[in-house]
Length: 369
Image 1 (cartoon, helix red, strand yellow):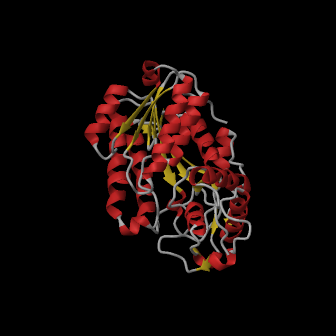
Image 2 (cartoon, helix red, strand yellow):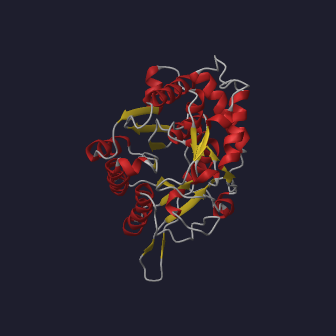
Image 3 (cartoon, one colour):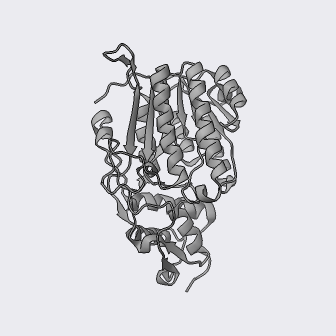
């Protein structure tokens, strides 16, 4: 077990992608659990998916801060949100100089494997230029710890499972994966050159309430609700290590509090204060089983009527470009260093999503046969 060497109490923390799925849940958790924390959030609020969900997340954060810190001046002391793009160095540099964050959590990125095939520019801008800007700002503003999102996509088509952070990841099968691997390489170089403590987190298929509509479980739900067919790739033979968002956030909060130690090697030069961890459920689920549990929970939450004919709306199709047949996280280092392993069951997680969906979009009003 590592010792925590960073206290978050009373610190200023910058969270990029603060209106995003993981980012907003992280901000919420930090405000609820860390006394006196000050959080600066930045997000471009782009329209990659329904921006109203991002506004809804921000409203929940504003309501939480108002509850914890009544009074406008008090709220502004602890929470500041900036609409901006991390690819804009002028905006980012000004933010670092003005707010002086001690810890940076970079969750801003263009996500999605398939979208990277049709719109590669967005990935270069956000995931490469934006991440470079973050590194430069951390370098010049003496940040104590940079925590950043990587992805299980970096494992590409590796056949060895479970995926270990010791595995070679030199064969990405999508531009998205390539940009995330590039983030890890850039962070390593900056840790080596400038002694910046950095920790990369390879997330495995994150899901939950108010998630990203481009993710399978959300897209399936939207289509089923409209009476449209859902396509299940690789003829249903895919397996995914689905990880509930609260489990991801728990891991991020623990890791934020331990920056990799600075040390010198035998040559007198700094050993990079650099680490990478998997955060996954360590329990890959078959996609067909996943869909079966999802439909049960959607009926239970009355998102879909009890007599919905699922077989009519399922279509088994071949693998799509950039996809991989299985994701499976080896979380041993996370358990050994932080005493933590994600544990939310797929049923519990999808139940929470279905209940949120019913509240946000409404329940079934017609019988679909």
